Length: 608
Ligand SMILES: C[S@@+](CC[C@H](N)C(=O)[O-])C[C@H]1O[C@@H](n2cnc3c(N)ncnc32)[C@H](O)[C@@H]1O
Image (cartoon, rainbow, N blue to C red; front, side, top):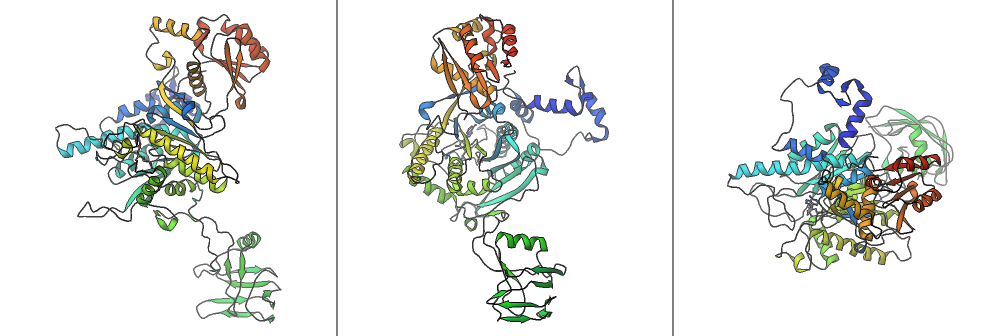
């Protein structure tokens, strides 16, 4: 098994090989061949339409370079480690996104991110100025800043796309500084055909008076689907039972049969003769005699008019309990739904759809923390609304620019509202906080400390609210980005024999440091595709431990494989037994023998 963190180029090549084996020579892609095979389909123009900037090629390479880091568990910073499904990761999201590839490729239902906007401001709690401070002119610096920002975003978006499910959606918050660049770079990464819309979010009711030209009331949220489909996005649900007419003058005339004992009316008791009703501007024909008794049509009502609905739609609505009425002698029918479907969201997001502003979010956060600790947090109501467009109550939702943790709050509140089991993964850099800030004065030294504190406060708050109700998961597993435990993956010692020998002795020492063993375990788990919320059983065997991922039927061995370990593995009869490849350089048991012994009894063996 390959432990490479990054299956992206490999994945692409495999797919290409499957559909175009002829484009490969000795296992490598032959671009000249590919061109010939594609003929006229290859873009003829040496200067095709595209966004280009300084450093773009290197940014692509950055996305493809394998991860040199891993994640280490920090149990003492977590809440309900054993039972929780939520994950918080501290570290640079580029490396984190790489590390997540194996376990989460194609698994994430929704991504919301709110990256630094490149406003050029130095006064925020997080860095937001991508222009290098050189002696260049202001316009040079601005352009340089755009390139730097794009170099930061491109590899992260490429990696994020791989994590999305086929029906996955991504939302990216942005303002006018990088809106145009973000649209073009996202078109490149996700495909223009998968663009859904620019949603405008009313960010403020009291916009700052910073310009003589316009007052900025909105920001934008760009939305793409991994693969745009026919799914209807869901906005808010109308809950008033207002009466709606069933006629539509622009439709062709049709006939609807309303069954007996369904349609209510204000007409008096008695028969109603067939004939022409309606008004001067629209005609409604009653095609058969009918009868009213005690406010109900007790015989079917057959009407010909320009209707909104077809007969199957009418039958379906009646089945769902929609109330139908033909109140007056004009015989114009109307309906009142008991439950309305959620409406397709308008591309303006404001209080009308229940979404708050920056000011609301700041005030809310200040109440939670008892102090102002973050600049311009997003209101969880915005993120809840967006993630609800294409929801899965069992889905995984990711935010890799977590800031104060608004997305985690949104996911928890969504679960609280409908009892769902959505899981969040939030990533935040341990970005240092300046001593001049309120957050510093409150004792925070990094932004990830603020994020974690919000998760703790939310846990306490939601726990106290849910006494007597079905408990939702409010815990989280805390992981931290750290250099790989294996020099072969750190990319720094593969050829250094001395270093390798040192590592091997370290790994095979009987009394291995427990934390180090757990770190190596998690690295192997991640590199073999096990998610961060997996339940792991520890099984002591003599001096060492075996680890079982029961839901996958996998067993992991990290130290010397003795006869005793082998016997235990055979007893447990997992689907597969996995251990690091380095063990076999000093191991008592020969790798091939081990493989054959295990295979004989139906256990797959993998070294990684
Ligand atoms: C605009 S803020 C997000 C605010 C968040 N939506 C909220 O409501 O609190 C952007 C965040 O991204 C973080 N960030 C910037 N670069 C990062 C990186 N390379 N890895 C992880 N986080 C990063 C910053 O520290 C900052 O907290």
